[in-house]
Image 1 (tube, rainbow, N blue to C red):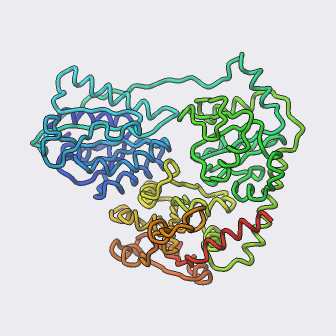
Image 2: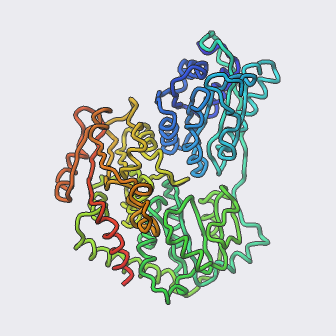
Image 3: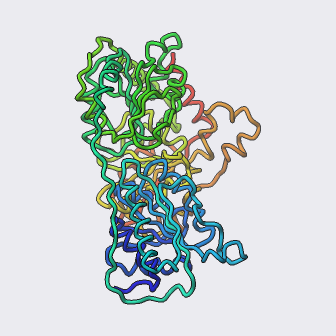
Length: 564
């Protein structure tokens, strides 16, 4: 097998492959040439080239998210590595298995005026699960053992319940392009074994007593689809004293669940809040989109809050944490379902469901009279999304609008809700689409998110299964309906960042099929063509121009009508 002549590179590449990495996204450079050569020559890994490092990292993140497997991203030295930071932080807070490899100059050239040289050691700080620095002089027996041991430890950490990115920084001397023929080197894997979760006997009595309280709430954040989790939650929902609040990004669905949290909360009268305040709050999964439920629970604090999950064991989002269960969600739900606790006769769950149904009826009446606007567009768009689609929601307004509508049973919902940034939504969706070619992947995005990440279209890996819905309202629409910005004289220029740009020429530059509509009738008429097979085997983008001055007024009126 031909590979780089640098032994440290040979060891790292073999360790990555032995620990389950089959894909790596590379950005062109010189200092990373030994690693590029070694990965590309290896028969067990597939390499991709994306020039923009920020986009490349999010593309790899999307691949890893879809595959639930480690995916590598590789760049040259200097500022290139800094461009990875947005995706690395997103991977950290979502628990995504991103393997970051950054080439570096030899240590003695750092801060000596050498080109493409910055302080790369531990550049991502606490946003990675494990960091290793290597250099090519580590070639003796102890050095081999060190490289294999540290990489094996890093990979063992991302196989845990709390996963996330790992970072290998590799200092290399010139020459960089020399190769050798070698036998396949040995590799090392370290497995970290953990047992199944069970509640200690001395705690069962106390926890069972808490579960017998009359007002219990389970709040589910971002999860990957899991039928077993969905089934166990549905079984718990049979308890009339328990309500289950979920979001589209939770990827769990049942007619007993409250799927649209903001919609339901807006119906609660101020004098009725205490009736909906939980005695026990159980939180599962990752980030919650709804700011309203965070405000509600911080004001109407539960007596007990159980946080479930290995990530951020002491995260106290609702300022009421009493118990932390650093265990797998499925294992926790199995244990709770098996507990024999006295069921309260309260109808707390029924009260929440009545709210949900009332809000849904009010929403239907409102939408029947609503003029063309962002809200009306979302109602129409979500009716046309085909079954079994991966639906990617960009951050800011888009993901919040989607949460106002009931989830579609056959659809998987994805969004970068780890840090909730707008910077890599399109690249992430593109990466997920590439590794799920048998599924349609649809991205709904706003104009600011799309233009910010337009280099996501600058690669050779976009195909017929990728659709982009761009809602262009001429700026950051969210700043027109959150409290504060509109009262500031800086609102239009600095917060909304109003503009008149459109995506047609960007699509032409990257060979993306383009459609544009400016009214609801035209939108609905072109949906069939939008989702139809592309004869040129390229993605499609539809740009929907909506009225910037009306969108916020419609949404505010919607919430006002719900509250009446």
